[in-house]
Length: 134
Length: 299
Image (cartoon, rainbow over all chains, first blue to last red; front, side):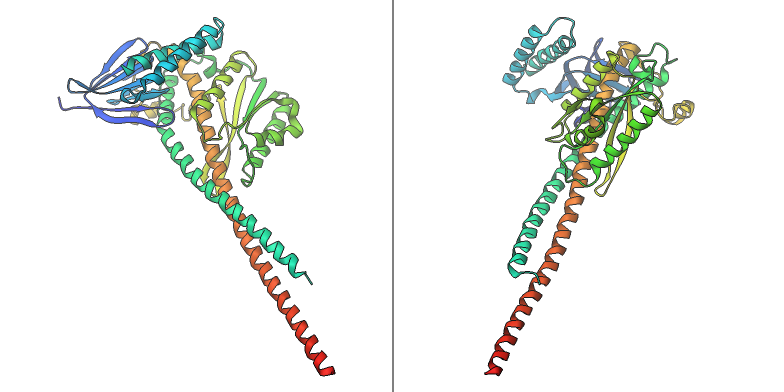
């Protein structure tokens, strides 16, 4: 198994990670999915979580994403994240602070309002960030 | 004959102006470098998003049933124009060319009986447009690109546009901004962001399938509608971000050129003034000498 998948993780502001990997596990909107060489073309939404990059059987890189889209085409895999931070660079206290703020915003927002929806998204993202920091 | 003291003061004034303009040029140059790097870093994301959207919309069987952001609200009555200008002046004609283009567009739309509203980004555009169209301006966003074009700011604008669209406040949204071509040239660009215009070359989709391979049949998770529903508002934000980044780079480029010219003009002026100053000084000396000599001769 020498074949590899070129993998790219980009945010609107920069390319966070671009390397070849044996397998990438992406938290898709309908559940996690792994991308191996020769994967069929796929478009998927991404939910807040951690993207894992595999080298052989080992996870070499874990990157927190707050949501976005994933595309697999022509043997390449690309994740378009709204926000992405390598798990090793997450500051635990920062992440927890964000979670607390998200909880607060969630409590304050009126149900069914656009703010409420936004607060729910932010809450999920913050939860995933704290989980990724562990 | 100009007074020597006045000339000295004048030269000192022009010199201090030159110092300011050359400092502004340096600042603009370093900001421009950063802006260009940022714009470059943002390109992969925008390119991929475009590809994904292209693939998705190409596989849509009909426009019917597509989300409104793509298909439009069915009307063409009310237009929202978003002019993106700088918050500060002294950057050549970049702000006024946006304002001129917007004004033309507004007049054309009003003549064909459409209703127009404006959402200004940047103080300079607001100030110029307020004179004629104060009643049309819904709001002005200031200091959006104070520290460079950030995606968060663009996303806020994008969300706001989508919310307004959903509330039926407008049918078509067009963004006016400067595209950065080079330091000395920026082009005014008008881009329709809502509803999303059909991708260029959509008609020859069959050709693309042959050579691009990007028309591969995708597995879609969760479903086409859901992806589009998430992707389209996102795309509005990305388009806004691109517009902000381009216009920020243009602003810095235009300012750099303008300040470079100003510095050069100041230099020329100093040379001229110095020449006049020296001539005047020599003339004064000669005059004094003549007075002394003729005084001595008279004795």
